[in-house]
Image 1 (cartoon, helix red, strand yellow):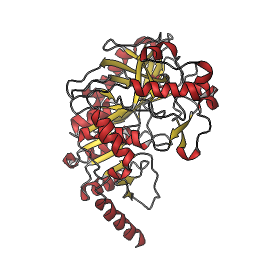
Image 2 (cartoon, one colour; image 1 turned 180 degrees about the horizontal axis):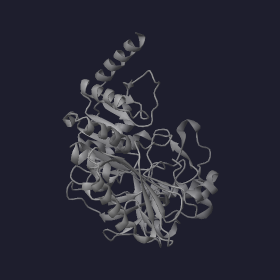
Image 3 (tube, helix red, strand yellow; image 1 turned 90 degrees about the vertical axis):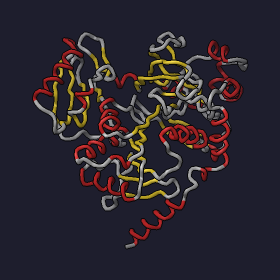
Image 4 (tube, one colour; image 1 turned 30 degrees about the vertical axis):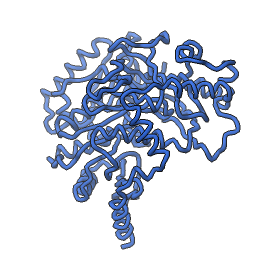
Length: 442
């Protein structure tokens, strides 16, 4: 009884709270409605970049010991400061921290650790100002303006609880680790009953829920958009959600170091890197800037908002293709990228001849995606690949032959493969999904 009373009180508060996210405070409102909106079409980050860099050179031991004088231009920034990476920061961690920092001004966090040992980060306590100010502005591209959201990510609820409500952030939070039809039915019914049109989820969680929606022939017109981040959106996931179910899907690129953030605009599927959030460079294997369309390079980021642990010219280990510096659909001047591959090594499939391909390169034709409800690659040895598939009801021997023909064509003689048909594919302990589980030791 008490549980029901608490639920309805929080539900009432959630509906009453029509002021979120304005409640995040003056700093948030100024950043989003003045700083971001004022500079929405074009933004020159040079002054902000030089301020962060020169403050680091003057005050932060790592940079103070390495660079003796402040810089005066972006060109000098590019020719004077060296690239750093995760291993460099971990080796000199103490020297990257601003001395005499007031503990009340910061919080600590870590990177996800998908590419090895996690990196401990020191982040401004008011990071939500630029983090949510940028993120929520991007979400407006699919109509979200503080609406109540269903959240299906990394929360584990008590088995007796189906949902909890956060009235402050207007969230209905579901258990990201329950993937049964019974629980998905509960999620669907709650969203329908309370008119919740937005689902905020990992792409893999949204995909599992969408498989249920398709199989049960549910009415998907009740959804406005699935807002999906923290994982790469895979082609089979996008195909099911957007093309088969007709649900708009919004995704973005970001990382724990909080240096680069970008998402779609309303008119195309290119990642628009937000210039007020951080400073991006895209470099080739020789460290040169990439300005040629469709050429792939590593994403390098520099903070514009963290003086307490400034990461400058930080090689993220993520790769993307350069597109342009102007978007005609939204009339904005900013860096456009596509085909992002996260944490490069975790995306590689190693072949027997010493070369490799990537899971991005194994992009299948749409007609194959319609016959599966999930897929994962596993590699233990070079030149050998296990491909887990969850069959859709339409899967047949003819379809299986098409899969075999596809992978024979793409992998050739340098990689044998085995199709394994499974009922489900487990997410990791943090609730995320790994499209490739790579165990090859180099």
